[in-house]
Image (cartoon, rainbow, N blue to C red; front, side):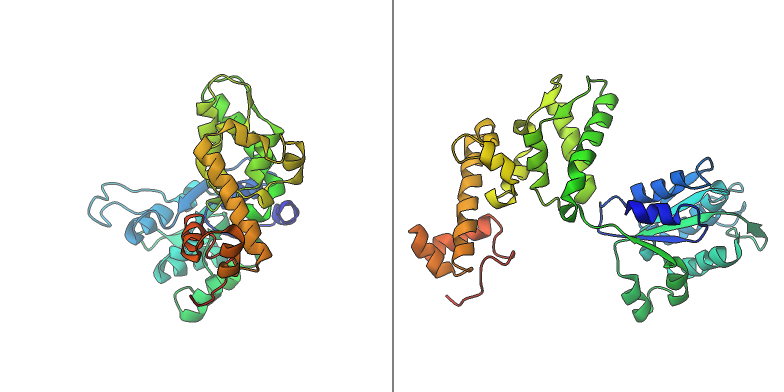
Length: 324
């Protein structure tokens, strides 16, 4: 991703940033802007799914007085505000076809008209778009303009989900923690190596946004401590872990055969962690066969199925689809 940012930073061509919700697409857009020649000019953000289509047109392209009810004076749109800089259009896959046509004109000719006006406005704006949707499929179905897709897709960056780049988690977590403590006017904090390893073992379905929220909580709950251990991580982090998802260093350095963090969390959470880990390993050894796993564990098949559902093991490939 960093290599791609360096490649596209000085170009004026549009950039399309793809990825799941919360992966940090806006962070990528900001990095492209701040590393390029437009860095000292405006960086403007608009989420295209956040407001109604009619309001979005006015927000992006501006309007003239009297063009609609409530238009009591002329208003410059975000394209004019971003002139000379970068306009980041998040979730642009939600744009109507009519707005897509106006966006295409800006990309091709650098001009547009305000709502209620026929006078062309000329701007010099680099466009960075982002989406979590499959624009190719939308173009095939006619819900996204094919010509706009090809113009946006000149330079494309796909941001992988956080679960696929665990090596980034420690750096991101420490950066978020520093920002949170500065905002809360607290002493600078550091996460222990064990806490960072635990964070690396969680799947982060909400991606960077979820990680940032977790670290904000940790910064608050740890008070004025400067070294923050795994015990301050939330329950969901432990519930989403298994012994197999924890880096080997934790298990080898732990008391006995259990990870050290289990001794600084609530008993019910520690027991749930261990029970889930046992289920995972037995199901793996039994190749997902529920009847065989239940026999090994000495519990009924229905009890095993209930536990597998409780720990969300049904859909991860460990439990087969054998008939009852």
